[in-house]
Image (cartoon, rainbow over all chains, first blue to last red):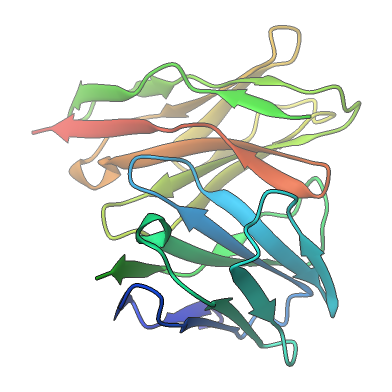
Length: 114
Length: 112
């Protein structure tokens, strides 16, 4: 089945140690999104790619970077994770950006910081 | 700017009963889209239903229907004949300014 796959489901890293989360999709969607979701909160958009065009949210910390080497893959890099970065990270895709385009989410990666 | 308000942090509903989850929105965009997502405890976000601002009919998808009242800026989700598997967080969201804005969610618990 076509889907959005996030690896790993659970990631543990040390304070300050760089970590990379990955997302792949078989939907051939143009747009890929990264969200951060802390416990009992709504997902918060970090950035998105429309094809190769990168769009960063104004309040996304510089500590967070992203790469999209091709249509299928997108990575979230956290350069120096702090305790406040512990959260669920959700990847989503959509055909294009538009009012009637639902976003399709992966299962998420739950990041813990020691 | 988009704003979504979900005023019910938690709800408990008896199995097989219908349930309405409230959502109000605030937007200055003339055209907008409204979405509902379900998030079980495992974490994945599951798309349930969509309503466009110019759609004449209320959206329906199986047991899910959207009670869209444009003048009141509300887009309530109705789940008919609730099941134990419906227990989850439910998020209302709107699309505008190239992004999806989520409400704070409602945690629904179905009681056997």
